[in-house]
Amino acid sequence: MNLPLLVETEAVSYVIGDGAIEKSFSRLDEFNRIFIIMDDNVEEHCLPVLKQKLPSLNISGTITIISGEENKSIHQLIYIWNELTRLNIGRDDLILNLGGGVLTDIAGMAAATFKRGVQFINYPTTLLGMVDAAIGGKTGIDFSRFKNQVGLFINPACVIIDPIFLKTLEKLHWQSGFAEVLKYGLIMDRELWQKLEGKNYLEINDWSPIISKAAKDKIDIVRFDSLEKGIRKNLNFGHTIGHALESFYLNSENPVTHGKAVAAGMICEGWISSKVFDLECKSLESIVKMIDHNFKRFSFGKEDISQIMELMKQDKKIRDNKQKFSLLRKIGKAVHDVEIEDKMIIESLEFYINRKKCNN
Ligand SMILES: NC(=O)c1ccc[n+]([C@@H]2O[C@H](COP(=O)([O-])OP(=O)(O)OC[C@H]3O[C@@H](n4cnc5c(N)ncnc54)[C@H](O)[C@@H]3O)[C@@H](O)[C@H]2O)c1
Ligand SMILES: [Zn+2]
Image 1 (cartoon, rainbow, N blue to C red):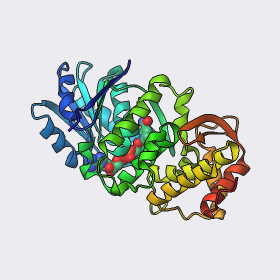
Image 2: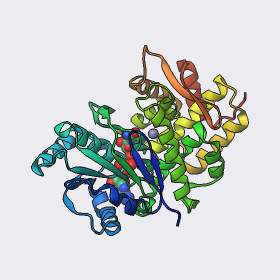
Image 3: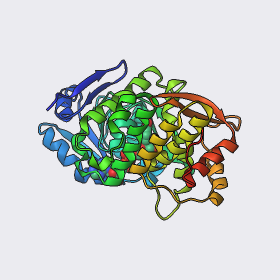
Image 4: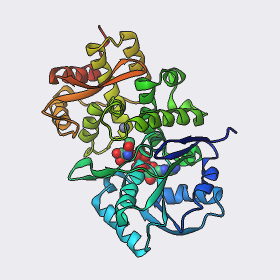
């Protein structure tokens, strides 16, 4: 077994890889008391793993919230604040956030706002959490029908990324996290892309090096642009159209995962990249092939495009009614703040639904 990797940035320490949980013990010493916030599934599947790996951890109390995006809400935030009050948690205590992106988003916000800030450590338990949500200091809740409408940038003291938690993760959530892993390959890490090309996420056995590489990619971006003024915007590749598709399916019988929507968004925004920049047809085709190999296409039709466009305009990244995109110059290199007209966005959605060929 490789030793877990330590990455120290000015703001945060990261422990990444097999054995990271055991390695985290020394970081828990200095605190008065330790409390865990998790969701119901995580309590069942991940708390026993944490206890087994840290047998001498003294847990002073736990708070369990209800799992699911629909519960990333002000109601559950108030519930956590009430529990923190009941447990009389103070600034010398530590909160240990155990869970996926929903949990680290809401519990990070709760910790950061309670008594003007209690320190917390993230232990992500989903693939998406490990390579994305637990890193970078964005916390928040959904509010008034909008995702991540209220929240703050606040860093955890540490992020402990141990793939052992993933053993119980459902396929659907593996697939969702895989979209973000592919995104790092496309926007900044050609080597990672080449390593993954042609593979289906279900065939991958050795996730540890992939998770380490993707997590390091995100750390590299956020350490230079923590507040998303510049290069961090590159992470939005696939997300402008992806978020609109996520909202489009939000109230359907089968709501889709974030990653599945982003994967479709990457096909559309890859096509736009081929029109605006000189992303070669060969590259676009390899992106489309890889995404189709891992994600089933959505079946929305031409008649749904106007609604999808409306949803895109409600996205909070839009200023002066102009759509700004993060696009690819080539595989492994992204650029941000590219203004794109509606006509081209519509054509990209048609490219997606008609399974057209690239014709630069
Ligand atoms: N803060 C950020 O920078 C950032 C970045 C990307 C995404 N996000 C947010 O992350 C959220 C999505 O995160 P997610 O995909 O991790 O979803 P999630 O937190 O809802 O987790 C998915 C499901 O898996 C369960 N689960 C978690 N770990 C498990 C395990 N090890 N075994 C079995 N079940 C487990 C959860 O209870 C949940 O039902 C969204 O709200 C999104 O907005 C935040
Ligand atoms: Zn995302």
